[in-house]
Length: 109
Image (cartoon, rainbow, N blue to C red):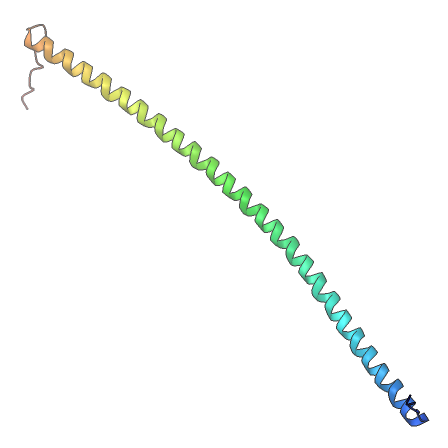
């Protein structure tokens, strides 16, 4: 079995190297803590923005649905007006054909 004898000079060098490595490890640990903290903050912001996007999408869908319903109701009312106008025109045409109505006289200007 071989023994390694450490002289006082080597002991000082080992302690200095150990101190340097500890300082380097402490710096890396602080950097890791900072990156971890930033990562958690970014995840939190991402969740907030995702929730806002989902809420905006739901609101947009609701607005589009309401707008489409209003347009369908407008179209139904327009169809009713056109239907009643057609009935009135048919009634007038039938009555004109049977002599029950007389066409309006043209005004001379």
